[in-house]
Image (cartoon, rainbow over all chains, first blue to last red; front, side, top):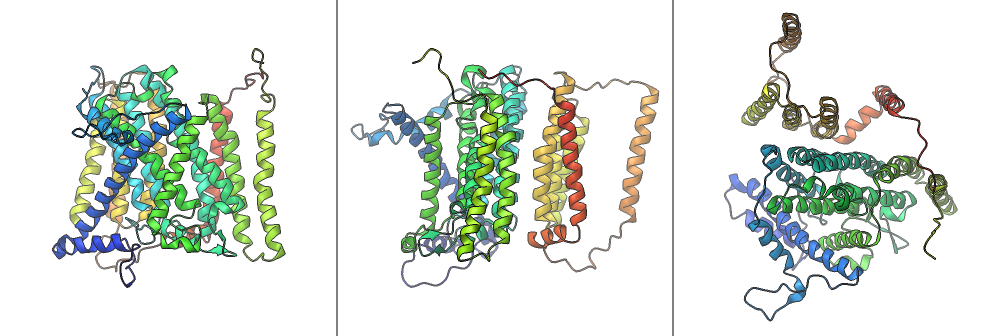
Length: 412
Length: 170
């Protein structure tokens, strides 16, 4: 069901090594159980790898944010029996996990107990589903689906339900208000997110993530990789995707649902202990899965940037690009200020959605003109770039008219 | 395979019955979402991947939000539905509606030829074939649906919009 048969290769091949290990383990079991063990192994590996990835994302985020704010960040936690070993505080996430598990779980007396319990479970379960269709390497894809992109977005929709359940089940006016706010945000940004993905499907002509990653192989003149981000429509689509992904995963500068100065902690107000940790986890899993999708669709997936670098296994390239995306998101969090709710929805409906629709037309132009070579290739690039830049400038000017440049009355 | 179908059918009908019996409107709405997810599971069982994912995307993702928002905005916090007996007229109306729907469904079920075992299993249709069908022979239907949805969206904006000046520039 999942993976292409690995080509026989002499000696140790890092590219297919994970598959060989998996097949070796699977063949230890009786034939009737093999399909089950096969999938159980995929699930275990995803849970382990991305569980650890989540743990180290939290510590990386705390450290990087601290450095951006001229602090040191967590640097005290070491190992329990080796006090002299500090490890730069890298064991902090495990200490956090133990703390979250041992904390008291408070459920409000008036809460809807079932929904209050169900919300964190649903959100974590569904945020993990998206990983199933990401191609992590040339031969590594947990489930190969014909309609993988559709599956990815379908799996993500349950997040909205879970946030509603959390907000309503808590019986707290701040929870409910912020759940409504979160839903408005998620629904607003789902549109630019999906519209920014459609051009890729249009040009590659497939919904399968494996084929989209494969379509980005090769180099122009041996240097420029055929990644979608290096085309005008791909670049515009990638930027829209980045903004929408930030908003979909409630990250700063779109962390309005959790605006602590207005809404305490949003729909998480009445959650404590491990249930809070589950929400936290789901947020990071969602961000990681979306970043993985962005890497697959725009940044060439598991493809290496230069032919000579293909000696590094493809899954390492994928994880490297994924880590790069996450660090970029942390950098954004340390840099930008939070938006107001009306600015947030205006940005989506008046700016991103029209640009994404135009970009769809741009991709159609690109898909219709693959025969423009030689000097015509320059014209193709120029037209495509113009379709991106001109509306961007015009729309941006019109929307900010009267707001900028900002005048400071009291500061010099 | 039959066992899976029975399990799906049991969960689907269970969620639907519970949604009908629950006196808490929010619970009813969420159980209804569960029933929709069950329908998606049934599509998956039948091998229609694309339709199943579309079902989840549209019903579990979007229609559920419309239902929940409608409940919250119209009931003003009172989410328990009345259970008392209202009037004889209402009861008769309810019975007639329920009977009509049941009759139509029964007629459709009984009118369908059930000899599916005789037919060879159809080959799985890829998304590409589905897209070619939608964009080729059925392009007109697709365009009409698109226009209807756009008109509905514009209508909703026109009804909901209040002509107020945006906050003035500082």
